[in-house]
Image 1 (cartoon, rainbow, N blue to C red):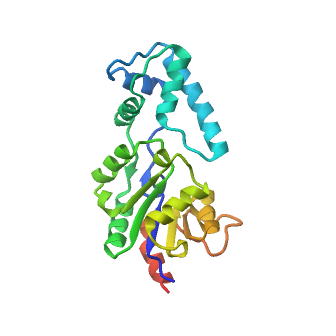
Image 2: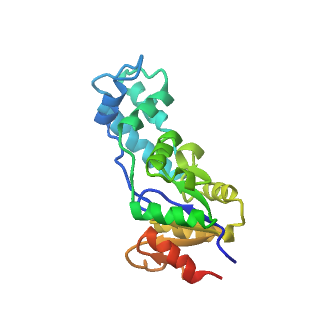
Image 3: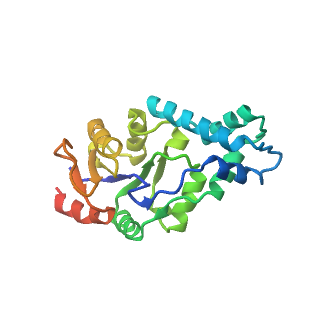
Length: 231
C-alpha cells in the first residue's frame, strides 16, 4: 500500500530546536506587556514552576498551555498577568523559534509537490501563530495541509489521541501515513504501534527498534527512501 501522507516532526527533524525560555528571559519579555506586573522574584518562581509543570505533563502525556506557567509563576511571587495568552505570545515572539534546515525544506517541498499530504506533528510550547510564522519565513508553511501541535491539542506524543488527530488530519487510513521524526519512542515506535508506518532519523539503528521501521540519516534522504520502498 502506497504512502499517501507524511506526518512530520519539527525540532531535530526539519529544524534545529530553538531555546526554551528561562525565567530571566520571560520576565524581560513580559515587561513590555500592558498592565503586567513582574516582581523581582518572578524569574526564579517561573523556573521552579516550569520544571514542576514539565514533570507533571510528561508523567501524564499532556501539554499544559504556556500561559499556565505564567499564571502560576505570577501567583507564586505576587505578579499580575491580566491577559495570559497575550503574555505567552509576547514571550515566544521575543524568544527565537527553531531554524529550519534548508535541505530538509527542499525535500519537503518536493514531496508535497508530488502529491503527498503533509501534517506537521510535534510537541511544542509555542503557540500555533509563532510556529506558522517560522514555517512561513522558511517558505514551507504552504507545504503543510494541517498542523497538529501539542500546545494546541493539550496532549503530547506518544498519547494515542495525538496520533488520532494526526491520522484524522491526514485524511487517510493509518497504514497510508508515514510518520517521520528523530525520537524513537514518540516518532517511530509510538506511531508504528498505532498502525502507521514510521521512519526514524538517526545516525544508526537503535537496538530493539522494530524491523519494519526505517532509519535514515537526514530528512533530505526521505525522497530516496520512499522511492526505494515504493510498492
